[in-house]
Image (tube, rainbow, N blue to C red):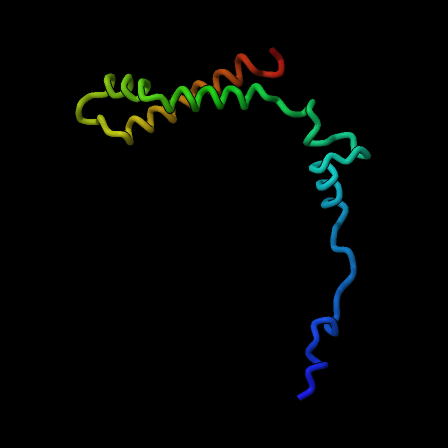
Length: 108
């Protein structure tokens, strides 16, 4: 049996470049190419206020005292962790939306 016919190096290879123009622009934006004026990784484009707000709200709503307050407000029949979680998620979304739209909007 002749094994020289089955070498991987003897297989045909397509050596054309498959990156189109849109992919090049996207890669240059992500990687911060200096030739392109808009870069996603430039420090001017990153707004840390949103991340700080999310962090504070996550820490706040993960406290046991918040669970206890919500449990004390709920009636006896619906005192389950499912309702507590639903209320916490709803409060998180409401507070996040109000703070982002009112206090941290770019116009303020």
